[in-house]
Every structure is written in C-alpha cells, then in structure tokens.
Image 1 (cartoon, protein in one colour):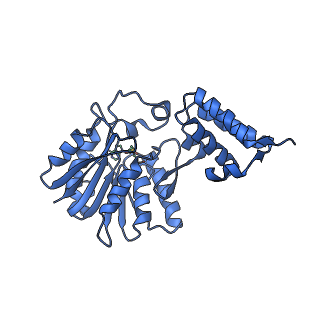
Image 2 (cartoon, helix red, strand yellow):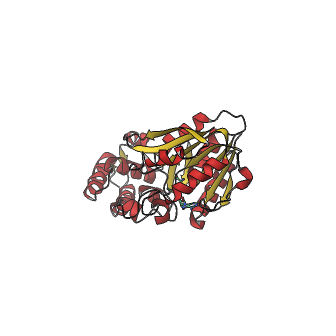
Image 3 (cartoon, helix red, strand yellow):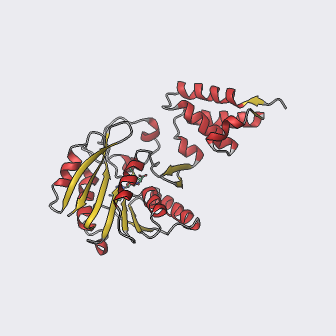
Amino acid sequence: MTRHPLRLAINEAERVLAAAGVDSPRVDAELLAAHVLGVERSRLPLIPLVDPPVVEALHKLVRQRATRVPLQHITGRAYLGAVDLEVGPGVFIPRPETELMLEWGLSTVESKDPVVVDLCTGSGALALAAAHRLPDATVHAVERDPSALAWARRNAEARAALGDTPIILHAGDVTVPDLLSDLDGQVDLVLCNPPYVPDGTEVQPEVGEHDPRHAVFGGADGLEVIRHVVALAARLLKPGGHVAIEHDDSHGVVVPELLASRRVLTDVEDHRDLAWRPRFATARRV
Ligand SMILES: C[S@@+](CC[C@H](N)C(=O)[O-])C[C@H]1O[C@@H](n2cnc3c(N)ncnc32)[C@H](O)[C@@H]1O
C-alpha cells in the first residue's frame, strides 16, 4: 500500500475548504486531520505519511465541512476554558469569545464557597467551566430548550464522572419573573450568554443552518432576553456579587445602559473581545 504525505492531504483539504468560503480553512483542515488520526493538532507534524484510508476519511469529512456543516458537528466536540463538551444538532456551539467573559467572571469570585448561576446554559459550557475552576462552588444552570438541556445533562454527567463538582440543571425560562427565587440575594456570580443577534441579521451558514434559531436570535432589537436577564441578575445577586452578559457587537452602549438603569447595580463596564469588538457588559451589586 503506497503511503501518502499527510501535508499534501491537508493542503488539498485547505484548498477545498477555502473554495467553499470556510473562514479558517487551514485550521479546519488540520483539526479534521487530527480528528481522523485521533491525535492533538500539535502532533500532526510528527506524522509525515498516512495510509490511503486515512486520506479517504479526511476527504469525506472535508466534503461535509465544505457544505458548511460546523466543524464541531463533525468532530462532535467543542471547548470552553478547560472543559471539553459534546455538541451536535440541537445545541449552540460554544464560542471562543465567551472565554473572556468566563475569565472575567471567575476573577471576581472571592467567597470560599460561592454560588454561581449560568443563565441560558445551552450545552452547559459556562456552568461546567465554572464548576471545573471553582470546585467549592454551587453552580446552577438554566436552559429552556429540552434539546439543549439533554446535551447539557450529558455533558454534566461526563464532567461529574471526571471528578468535577456536579452542577444543578434547571429546565426554566429566564423571562419568567420568579425564576430561581430561592436564590434571591445569594448569588456571587451570574454569567449569561443569551440569544442576542437582532432578528433578520445575516449570519454565516454554519450559524443560520445549524445553531438553533432561538439560541442565536434575540427578537427585533436582539435585546428581548437580555432585558429579563438584567432584572433577574439584579434580584439574584448578593451585595458585592457580579454579573456578566455577552451581547451583540452593536449593543456596547445599550446593554451597559440597561445594567446601569438598575438602582442596585454599579461599576457598569463594557468589555471587548479579541477582535476588539464590544462583547460583554458587567456590573456589581451594591
Ligand atoms: C447563545 S446560546 C448560549 C449557550 C451557552 N451559554 C454557550 O455560551 O455556549 C443561548 C441559549 O439560551 C437558550 N435560551 C433562549 N431563550 C431562553 C430563555 N428564555 N430561557 C432560558 N434559556 C433560553 C437557548 O436555547 C440557547 O441554548
């Protein structure tokens, strides 16, 4: 059997993905090759030659990715912080920019056994990443969509089996006024990556055709869920507790204004992502 240079197979995969309009064709080609070979991407340079079935398997996945199926649906995995999550159809894929909000939130926690709430948890990403980093925390996560909740449950069980402190999952709607009222005034940190894209905004096929609609779009102005989250956070936080809400890059003024309009919230700030776009707003409970 003639073995093939892996580098050439990856070059070809990159060419096909670039022609299909994929944003990061080289990275995706390498991640798909790593997935096929069952190795970390950083190990690829150590594998000069591969057998023909490997090249075939890579081409098959590349053809799928070229139809703009998200990379994470093909590999079945996504990451947030140090946490590896199972994802697929029916749940939002965690994004790298959300890590900045996670880090900001974790840096505010001073209490030894904090209470953390992740609103709109999707796959459980923020809640599970927080539970991993704060083993003494009690972490609650809320999700309305049964399909996303099933992914969150699977991820929560996997993380608990690996030794992380189990999180508490709630099937709930963050727009319902008395949600989590047992926790009123007791929460150290509220994190939320809600649906926030204004309806009608053009998005990439990976998002428009594969992320659940209600996970992405937040009503005509994109703020339908965020308005409720601001009120809920103000009610849940204990004095000195913090809230962080991810938002659309067009909302760098309005979300801080919504937070500042709450008498009990102070130190309102907006934060940028790695591309220097306005990305999340934060505040502290007085
Ligand atoms: C942008 S996704 C974020 C998921 C996860 N937090 C992350 O960062 O990967 C928003 C999530 O909010 C959920 N959601 C939308 N409206 C909701 C509501 N009113 N109450 C609870 N969850 C909601 C969606 O089902 C979706 O899973």
